[in-house]
Image 1 (cartoon, rainbow, N blue to C red):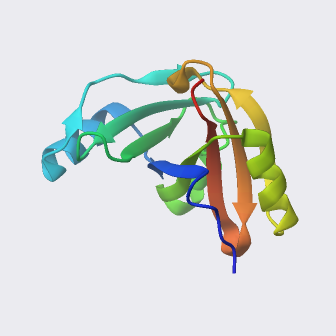
Image 2: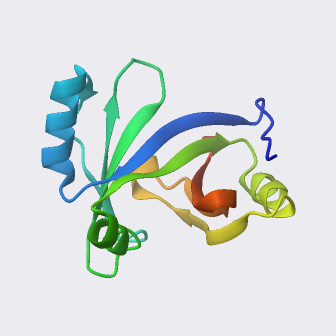
Image 3: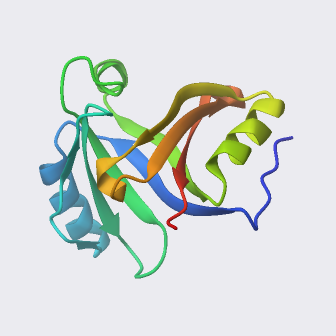
Length: 142
């Protein structure tokens, strides 16, 4: 069983792949009675467009992810699965240590840390835990 120390991680968002973040966010926010600020981030490092929806102020977010190109890491997921639930993202106090801990428990590194536009250049990393559970780690703000 994989456990993550609660003190070092905080759920930041749950990610869903959609064909169009603007249309998806407006529709989802309306149906949930949630808040969407209209901000859409294009991240050339990740080849995606993302936006965030807040259901409860100060709580975890819902991220909508759209492929920004045919070779985007999520393009195949959208094509083959029609989109939907994709990943969970945790804020990690120590990104490198968190990755090493996960790797020691058998998780695979999918993508090493890279800066992310939506997070003002804070780095994100991707790992695959058991049962093909995709986890994104977001570097804690300094």
